[in-house]
Image 1: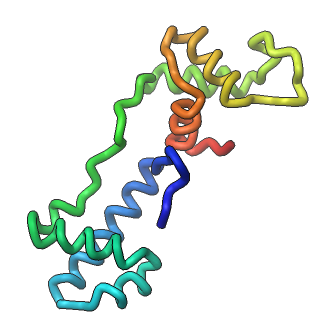
Image 2 (image 1 turned 180 degrees about the horizontal axis):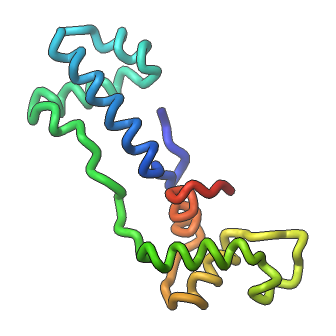
Length: 135
């Protein structure tokens, strides 16, 4: 599975991916072939080889998720407030063109106004995706 440029996984997707790696680890112990596992789990043989190397070096614990790549800048209370504000819609925050709706740039501006926290547009995309919002 290849992720979009600058992508990332939601916590649920991370958990699914970790479970997949642990299932593959069970098959490593049985001596199953790399190509068979790659086909069965719909991943690349390269990923299976990388996981096998980690498994041989450090055991099954090496295949556990390490969590998000970056610490989120908004705490849970701020995230809840942001969601409430997003539901109010762009006009409630001074964005006149209602037909456009929320854009990543607008959300970036809103986060800055509400919490004085700086995000890049790409960072906003990752934040929203991590919390189950789609673009």
